[in-house]
Length: 232
Length: 371
View 1 (cartoon, rainbow over the protein chains, first blue to last red):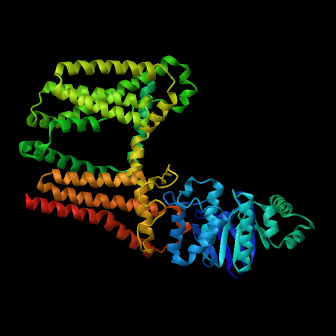
View 2: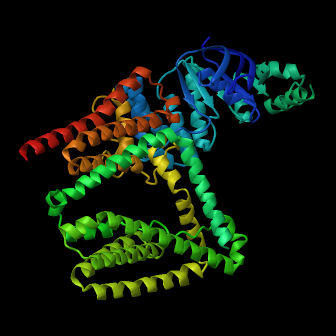
View 3: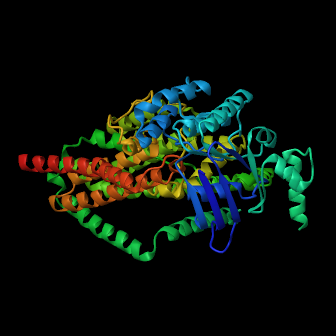
């Protein structure tokens, strides 16, 4: 098991829990989708996992990870290559990662923008920079917060290929997304979250069983669970 | 209408006072203002008493005049316009004109008082060292005042490069008039220019609303002037500004490294930021150069005090810059240990503060010994 989360309560201010009773695992070679509406607590859960949420009561077990943030985080005064070079220096793997960096730059068609400031890039290109940084080094775990945001169809296809490769190599991937159609196709399991709590988790089949709808899509399941939750 | 301008001036005053109160209390003000006034008074007194033997006598009058023309300026002609005036006030032409005209007279009066004070402080240099008469000094005041007014009006009309050229021309013309043309003729020329400028500004910027957006933009910048200055002094209060350029144009472009050692990555980041972030770069250089210049010109007893103050100010400024860089969100992607950060901060402070000040101290000692 690579990710093991057991959070009783978590939030930004004392006595004001944004998330509660969040408990799940992500195994090696597994891609798990974290699904929820806006403000459901997905990003807060991810922050708690990375240890940057101010108040967390619970336990988080996680190894070194590659991370794609919800919105691109870029340094205003570094060029694209300087971001990559900085990452390699921090990781202390300057020589071994250069080849991988060039490979990813080619995959995402950013090899001609090496000496430009990425803050001047379009949203999609900035997202590609985030993907390059996240996939530069080999990690046992990947945390991807809305990785498809702003990507063009070609880049999306390449990202899916990379995710397949990482899974095959045994990485545990937790992906928060609103792209339910895509998530349905590529994720092994789902964690449906609303109002800071887990509504249901499991494979697509087990979720269909839970809502008693044989051929329901992930969106249908999520809708049904949300309605039930709001009625309760 | 007087009420409207008073109301808006009151709003600005209260904004600035709140801002000041949020950063310093009276004890801090007391520790800064009183010593500065006392040291300043003694330095000035010392300077006046020894003026005929001081370094200032070696500076030619023409250089002083040109410098005055270059460094004095009116930042903005205040209009006290607000964005919302586009909706209501713009339809009431009479009120709008009165607001803008009051803003103009307020700006000019304030600048005249400021210029007069500066010239009064510098008067001993002009009168004792360069034997300038009081009438000539008053003409210089008129020259500087009119020139600054002309520059700020041209700023509203011309492009950047045109402004630069016109500023150079105006400065040279002003200095030449003061030095080589009889006082009465110069005073007359500049009086006519002043009247022309006032009527030009009234015609194009007071009575006309064509430049409304530009004037609002400039006035808003003036309204938030102290806040912006504070952000420059204490940059941790604002997030970093995004560079306007697509790629670095100066030094270490094409992503080349500054340091060969790959474990100096934090230093690389801070140094490149200092180089590429205009406000950091200018702030640091301004502090350092002004401090060193002040150390050179003050009497021997004050040199150590100035160097000491410069050391602590520069150090806290650099610490604040490093702190802001280290608080950037980027560190949620790059995970760096506290030991690495501390070691890098210490090396950076040595490079940016200790080393230049040590050099300044050595040069000062050598210079004093040679003298």
